[in-house]
Length: 452
Image (cartoon, rainbow, N blue to C red; front, top):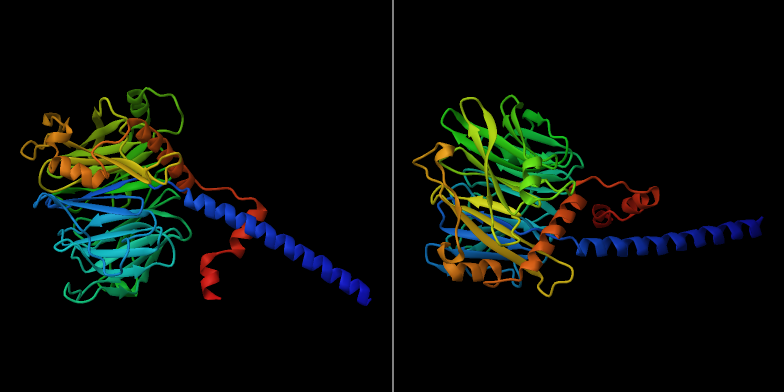
């Protein structure tokens, strides 16, 4: 009997050794995949166009348009501000604060007066989206497990040492990656979109640290992941009209109070025609940006070298394609869009980090479209045009700062566009795991490791 028990023990020990070996192989594969994840370049513009920020990889680059100079970030934590890919950047509504966050699980809050980091928050998981409340008193961020967290900022003083703030959960999408966070123009609602085709509208509570428990509505209609959100501000709707884009090649318009779908604009066929491609699954909407002062919506679409402009008819609550503004002579497929209340400009960036076969770790290219006139809110009267580099505010100094160099090889950006397309699919399209890999992921969950 003892011999049989010993044999069973040896078999079990052998199986454990095999499992350990398989786990180490799978873990090495997972880490390699993580390190090869391509991060698209992001852009954000100060509300009154005081500055412009670009994030590509772990680099956060800011240019001061008022003083016509590059910004030096002050972070008393030492070293680089972030040590892994940045996934979200955003200015607050009043422009006094700026937030950045990403794969290093750090959320950093910056004063835009001094560009000093005034608060750092440690997230349990990698961060996928960020937002600042309209009053500037709270920062919200979403993680890849589907939880939205909130941090309070009252009493933050630039003369004090940077604060290490503690976040508390605000709401959850239950195991679905949250792709976008936006506050409504009146600040009463926080809107979150996810990989599972859902948009949730939540009443932002007076005491956010106690959690947000009142759901105003769900906006349901997308048939693939929702990738981006934006608001159209109207005089008769203080909460604004919500616009969303997604992997189903549509831009949709919503009434957030009722959650009702107002209109759907299919952009895939037009984008494929303009980009002269028949490749499937290449018309994902990667970003939407409303143009303040007029009824135009700029749309960035995978494989489209330029942007598509949609016109919103506020009286009939409908969307229609107005025109495509193409970037002639460049492999420029925007990965992120930004605009400000003043200036009548649309800022665009393309680029990526961790690009295979490139000698440069973080690549970006900035372009600007002008011609959006507030005095002519009628979309048909707008005459947008792509500015040449010398006409861009800040000129060569801005481009050198935000791009890392004034010029980059065109072929590299074509490769970057393809890499971003693949990365978005890998991130947002649900993966099907084998039983063995599912068990491995259960055994190696980071949150379980940290609690042991």
